[in-house]
Length: 615
Image (cartoon, rainbow, N blue to C red; front, top):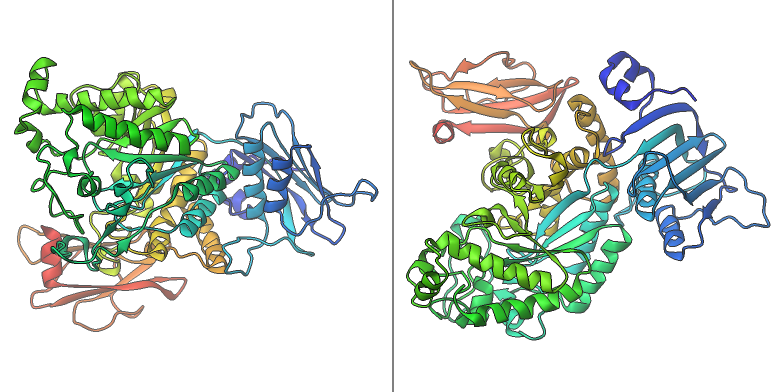
């Protein structure tokens, strides 16, 4: 077998063209192409060298249709899977060798075997199926000869799904976990509670789901949705029973994914307050909001100054801790408006008695008390980076979303950090030219996610546990749209969180993404094609109308445009440099071509659109 390390393939275009390299996501640590291929035949058998039933089931589930070897029948071209030490490889690593005469997958632990199986599945031809399965194993399929030795860069490789703003049923949650597993994510962060809905059954507090899980139905852009009216039926929503939760947790564990529950507090609690108004300072009855317009107008915080609040938190977390065997509970801590606390009659004496000078210190007091509750359940606390304000709880892990600053500050204090800055990791943002996308806010392109580097140079690398993508769902009303917003940006994050630092090559990544688009097409999974669309930026020159700047994420795309209200094609002006929008022109239209054919959507902006964009 000819030894060619994959890093060299990525950095040497001539060599890369001469060797067929599989389109794997994420990129393995090393890949050495071999000669020939392994062909699945009717005699191919699985040779599973472990008596552990869970591991044996995992292998057969991931390589369906291949029989297990019978000791009485001679092995012919076997696929051998074994648990054994691999030099220099950790618990999630594996060694995979494919030759024309057999396949050998070795890993020190079951997790490594699982990830090796995911790589092997990606080496198989795509299935033609609507079941969500990516591959089938049938006679005549070929797997290229190669040797891979692989392990992840980070131990925390997560995706977060917000099921509060819109409820996603158990079947979709499990399908989402399946998709994560294919790309070696190992943490499913489940945002279970927020202002718009409480989604987890708490048996000792039944009104949380009887009332808090349902709101009045609304459609439309998040910022324009009307408030609920008194007397309207609360018919939209849902929740997961505790049996549902256990089933999802088991399902994820079978795929080596840890489920981290989030019960967001002290803010983002309007659904709980609607069920139990005594939880907040004013004890004021409220309706579950359909939007975010109530912020700073209605108190959506727990009262941090009443012992009854912490009895409520203890009841909730007692049941949550029993349902989730993983080591963490996420308690949010973000975006807590404290103006109502400043006016609260109960809070002033408590602040004086505890020498709390600011409401930020009052939130720190709250989080520190909650951390003791979490630790009493045998768990560790995670919070968003706002929990730094007023003083960080002694053993907290910080999830940094407002850029990298909070994570850097926490790491310098010696705390573990999960990096998830919005500009790289927020999957609810525009991922392409906004005029060609469903309505949302801000922007995080595929190139942004791919450029993400979780470890700042100024902190200890061992304190950065990893990172994750976050799918908030204010503007994500359906499961199909949840998939659209997740992929392909989650492909980029999979590479970032698994592959060695510096192992980035944008043209190569684009080729791999397009290969996996074909897999998603066959499996019936939705995804965004935003990387095919032109990008328009505007500046106002010292003299003149508008300076137009066009760009594209693909390196081999050509852009053509018109300003005379005609439809552009490849005979229209070719964009080569910024140009001045002609006076009197009413609309700019741009189309991209690749390999002589149009790709993506035509982008169309009126003068009014350009003016708004400049602001």
